[in-house]
Length: 81
Image (cartoon, rainbow, N blue to C red; front, side):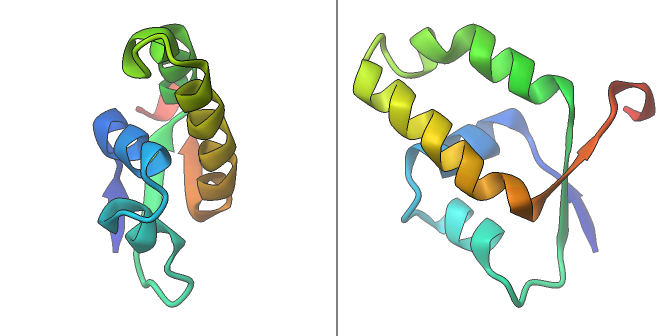
């Protein structure tokens, strides 16, 4: 099964690495292939101050956790979207 992740789901998972969305993404036994468009990371970076309420600690956590989630996500190039 393939699921295209919405930016809000990915951000929520990255902000709360112990939450249900991140647990689903990190489940090694999952039969789900998670896909995001390449531009999603540009958009997250562009809006990270607003997403994290100008809190540098939250920005650091967001970026660190995105790196943890990244191996579980297939990145589709923008032309395929």
